[in-house]
Amino acid sequence: MARFAKSQCRPCPARTHCTTTDSARTVGFPPRELRDLQLRVRAEQQTPDWKTRYAVRSGVEGSINEFAHGHGMRNCRYRGQPKAHLQHVLTAIAVNIERLSSLAPAEEVLSTRPPTAFQTYLDQQGIPRSKSWRTLGT
Image (cartoon, rainbow, N blue to C red; front, side, top):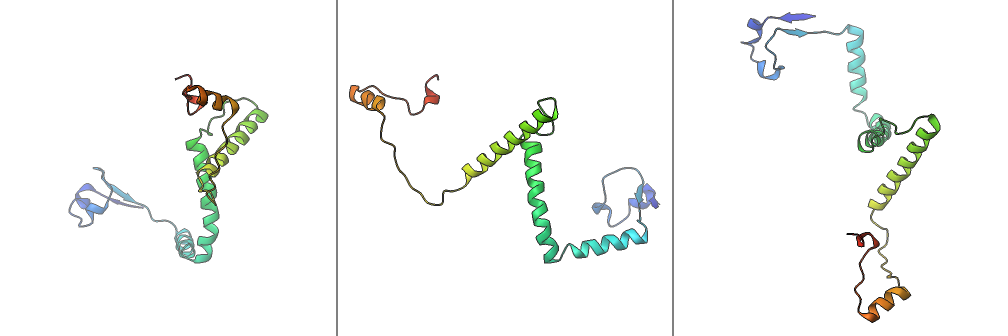
């Protein structure tokens, strides 16, 4: 461990690259074994094989992050393992549906449904019909 006083830090040419604290600086040096391990692992992380293996983990971590932060899965709404499990399963289904709905369709097939008998009656009578049942109460 190395400690530097304020008076030693102020005239340092690398001061702009340091943290912004007004107290003395403390720099820790890991043991040689740990330093060698860090260097070896950092070198391994640059290989294509490691990056391929990490890509899988990265995808899984992204999904976990989406569940935890995007869908509130850190806190369960129900008590008991069976209900908590059901909440997790239903949330996973909802996320999968959301992901599938955002995918572009493989082939654009626009097939319009023929109007129902009720819609045909409304059209014949000149009665305007709403575009969606969701807009009826608004």
